Figure 1 (spheres, one colour):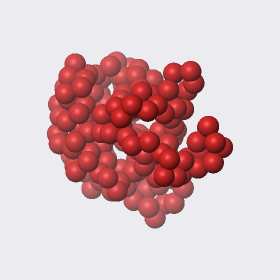
Figure 2 (figure 1 turned 45 degrees about the vertical axis):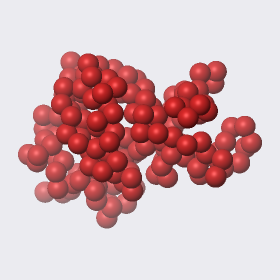
Figure 3 (figure 1 turned 180 degrees about the vertical axis):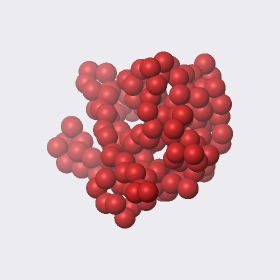
Figure 4 (figure 1 turned 90 degrees about the horizontal axis):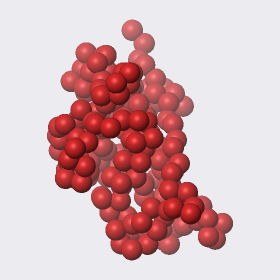
Length: 175
């Protein structure tokens, strides 16, 4: 059986005149988030599991990358048909964090104020800021409640932030 492939997708939010108000006091926008999904979102949109990546991770959590089939997702052993996070029953979503370097808005992104890469001028973002940005994407997809938010390391901190910041939107938290 061939290894399934995953395609990175992109979503942009917090466009002017409504940038994201960061916890540190600055604003950021527009914000693009890279994400991948595995499995199918059902009609009720109630079968989503959000997998949050570690500090050095990215949105490519499972399968082969469509862009490079030799690049296998960092949790491929756990995500897929018949695996612990079963894509035959769940829609699995992994979103690259803002401030990261794998497709989401971060230091290498163009600062709309200068036309040059942010570099060291990129504002400090918190776990809370990352989760707020993720929530915008979840809302865009029409998902009101997540079956679970799962993550290790920094992803575990995001899972805990999801559970405390949006308790009515998270059925289970697995940090």
